[in-house]
Length: 564
Image (cartoon, rainbow, N blue to C red; front, side, top):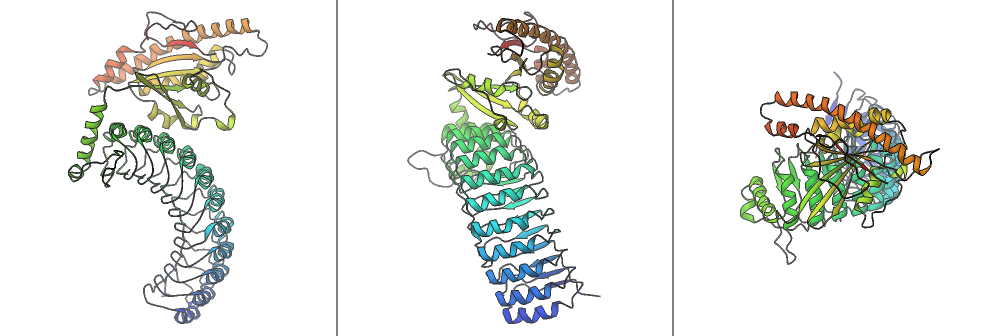
């Protein structure tokens, strides 16, 4: 029987021994695994090993981590490894490989099309080396794990890597921690995440990412629906970046570990993160220590944290409270476990209760109907808005806040694309939400098309997740006449469409209401939902705006509004 596995790790093998070993390898034609980690192999030994390895066409695993291989040795290995077409695992971490070695080694990577795992962490390849690896990495379409942590990679290298990531659709683990990646690199990396639907572990901790980079990452993280672990600790993320991340968290329903400790997140960022935490039903560990969160932020966090039924570990802050009053959970509370911490935060929440009421408004509707423009107008002090470029359309969900003094309106702007609909059903649920269902007569000119294509799918979604929803139909582009219409004729046309749409909606709501009642009656433990269903679509109080009309007064159905 031919030898299939040879393990020689931690044996103090130096170059001389590696040279002799390389000579004997050529006869081990059935060898599948070779482990030479934790030795003292340098360039001469690596070169000799490479020549012997070239004959091992059945080799699937090669481990040379924790040696002393530099650029010359890596370059020689790269030339010979191209013949190892069955190789699945390649470990070169914690050597002394720099940019030149990475560039040469990258040329040989392209032939390793079966590679599943590649570890080059804890070297010093830098931007030039990372860019040199890109061409070879892009060919590794079976790659599942990539470790380039602690390699002095900056924005240029991260940008190059971001472009190659688009091809690595099987990637599950990506480690880029402890580099020098800033906002520019994070933006390009984020762009590369769009197709990494299998990614489960993403580590970008200990870099130099600030708010712009965090926002770009957050925008693209919504596509990573299988993500289990997200590490962004020891960066420079402030409230704006944390808010952007909070929006994306609602889509990461499989997330189990989130690390944001040692950033610069304050109360405003904590509020948005808290909103996102409420949807992370699978979260087991959360780290937020070493930030700038104070009492009000902790109170908002508590609202989301109390819903995390699977949370096992909660790390907030172990540092003494400083002069600025940043949040510190008392040691005697921490010692009692995370449930005690939750109770402590709930007390802060109760202390802050009544200071401000929050109204949750969800804008729904198909793409290019005017939802984002409407939100911008409602949140702008002057009531102004502007057209939204196609490239800047909402991805999954966007947010906005309008502070009205005694209360705050929190807008959730849902993207219109059907691809996001399943995940949006989680966001859309909630008994305390108000729905603005938006459509534009400029896009579809007949009431029946508007109802069937634009409104009916959303009504089904809203009623299925929140039977007692308050829904307002909003017709946009009142002041933008359609082709062939004068201004006066256009307003008359839009008004007629509104009447026809409302009639269709009211008759459909009766059916939906009946279906909901049947479903709720079968759930004996859902009495509160039954009460909401009996209430139906609630009518709001009379509005003072002259453009706003009440249709079907006396019925329990949606209100209607026009938006210029």
